[in-house]
Image 1: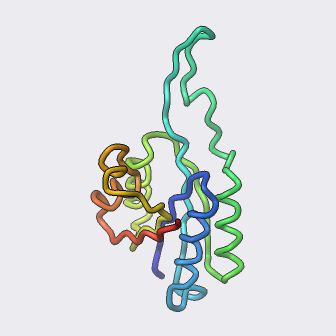
Image 2 (image 1 turned 45 degrees about the vertical axis):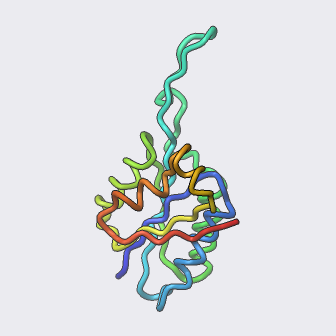
Length: 142
């Protein structure tokens, strides 16, 4: 069985592109297992109303619609799919889940950005590509 991790954010279009790429793998319906992960990004905000920590508002069962859409797309293509939700720094959590499940690959939807945009703003996709211990496939969406 070829195990693929699909990190999914709130952008359904990019997430669906990743799901389609996994569904298009050879013998995907028989030989691919997909784990769809959504990471609730860690934050800590202090203001007039007091302090709010991401730990106080995160709910491991509250998946964004994009996660449900990806799992549904994968299952309709015959791919075995499961989902999980993590809390923390996005890149770190993606890499930790990939290690935990012993992923054979990571498939991510990305957006086209200029070289300047990448340098100025960073990118979760870029960080995962540079740090993962397994192959990373990036499906670009305009």
